[in-house]
Length: 131
Image 1: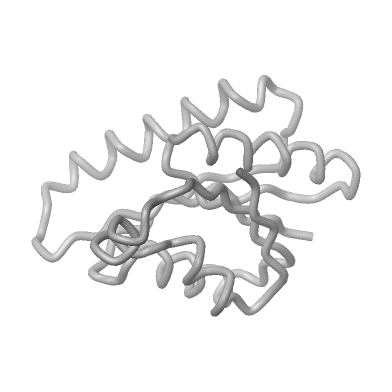
Image 2: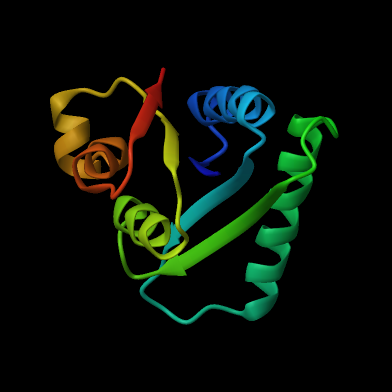
C-alpha cells in the first residue's frame, strides 16, 4: 500500500503527515511525500537539489525514525500543484492521498485556486483531507 501526502510545509500538511504516519504503522504502508512546485521558466538544477535535500531533512525529522518505508519527491512542472499530485498518484500506483486543507475566503480560492479541491475531485484513488 502506498500513501501519498501532499506537502507544502504548512501546519495542515504537517497534520496530514502525522495521519499518514499512523496509517503507515497500522497498514504496513509506504509513505510518499510529494511537494509540488509550479515553474514556467528553466531553473538552476542546484536550486532543485537544495530544495529536495531540505524536503528530505524536514520529513526525516518529522517522522523521527518511526517509519522507515518512505520517500520524498519534489515535482517541478508547469502544471498546478493539484494537477501534479493527481498525475503523480496515477503514475505511482497510490492507494490513498492524504492532504491538508486550509480555510480560505472565496476571493482567495478564486485568485489562488484550491489544490485540495482539485485533488479531491480528480484523484484516481480515495482522498482523506485533514484540517
